[in-house]
Image (cartoon, rainbow, N blue to C red; front, side, top):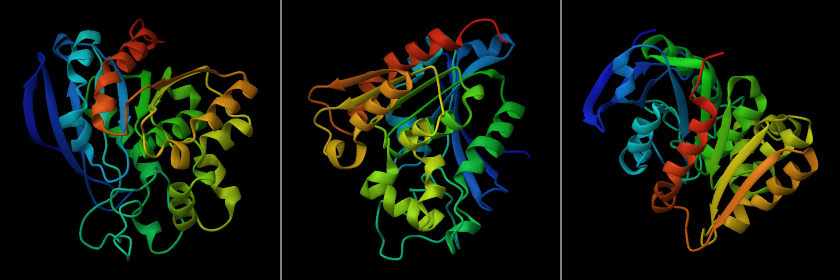
Amino acid sequence: MGMDIVSEVRSHGGRQLVCKHRSTATETEMVFSVFLPPQAEQGGRLPMMWYLSGLTCTHANVTEKGEYRAACAEHGLVLVAPDTSPRGEGVPDDPEGAWDFGLGAGFYVDATEVPWAANYRMWSYVTAELAALVEAEFPVDPARQGITGHSMGGHGALTIALNHPEWFRSVSAFAPIVAPSQVPWGEKALGRYLGPERSAWRRHDAVALIEDGARVPELLVDVGEADPFLERELRPELLERACAEAGIRLELRRQPGYDHSYYFISTFMADHLRWHAERLVGTSN
């Protein structure tokens, strides 16, 4: 397995690391960040949070702008932030250079279509390979995991949790793409990565998963009312309806004046982490 620490800085009494390793899932080098709160120096395994980033992002966006470290240090949470796609020489990108597909836009699926299938395997990378690496290298408790994400990463957080509810005690999202099968960003990505057969898309669509019987106990979702993508790409009302029909407790908070940026995410990050901590911190199962 193995990994290298690219950088390390002290913050809020803990350690902010950036790490790299060779991925067998993507057949590329992958970079991710890990914040270890000061409680990590006291021994024992800690609850952990996954943060999945959105379109065009790397691990660096949330690491530099997410403002999560004070809350993680307060609650004793490890936070792991992967990249959003494979990268490197030979990795295909959108031939037209579009920002919403290809590099930085892996959509947390395992691609089945040429030429994407060789490297774009972000589902396996996050849920299997990176999860195993983090558990082996850091003092995390796999029985106490939460997951969150933004936009495309909110889509990833919801779909991973709905496919594997036994892995996560808590799930939240910032401005998630809740029904990619029904919006342009998702139709483009799922169609190119997974092919034209829409039945294959359903396990990567939170609303479709809920319609098909997938369940989690509760969800916390924040969206900004000034988000320019709200009506066309995010469509939180579809998740609201699906959860109501399925009996899933959804706290959907529409935040007046906030947009899609990290100014929005960082404003509510500590609140999300506090919500997760209430469900994660305690005696391990």
